[in-house]
Image 1: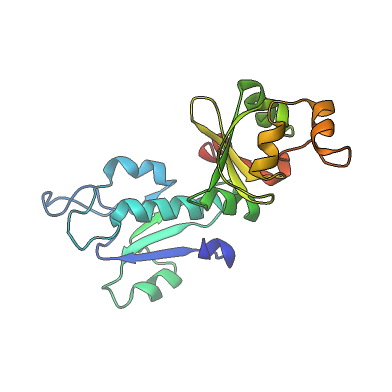
Image 2: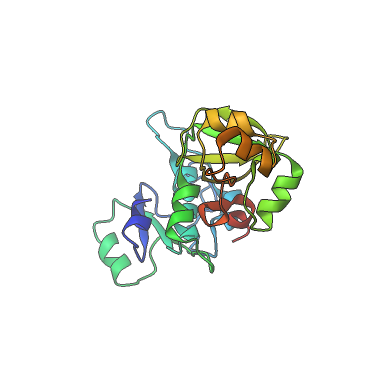
Length: 218
């Protein structure tokens, strides 16, 4: 997230191993560094979890960070921090550690911020008609909302889930949870009756929303 904030050209993650390895060096003496990967997905199968008590994340967490940076168009290098020359090597463009490529169609800053957020306080549960509508880049309307989860205010980032509990999108909501509880499932004329003629009937606009299926396919 910091790399995206400053529009960095590269994210370097320094760790206690020389890069992403083909196996666990503690049990596989032939384990070697993978020098290059088009995306994080190529590395997931060979990533092993650290078992040391003092570990706070291991390689899997670093790959998640690289994946988020890649969505914004920032490549990542994972290399060994014990090497005093590692930063100079990276800046000189020398082969160092594991280089992970970035998405060819990166997310914009706003959508990247939405995807990267954790611990959302609220969610909208929508029917299949609403899922199809937002996938077609249409507005999310009250008529497609069948339930609410959590508490949120107007302007908050909330999840959009289908009735099976799968998060399909997330975006900036234009009503608080109490208002939406009054108008969910209602059509345009009914919304005006409930909240007044001057209130918008749009719950979430496509330019304030990110579709998670699109993110996964980048």
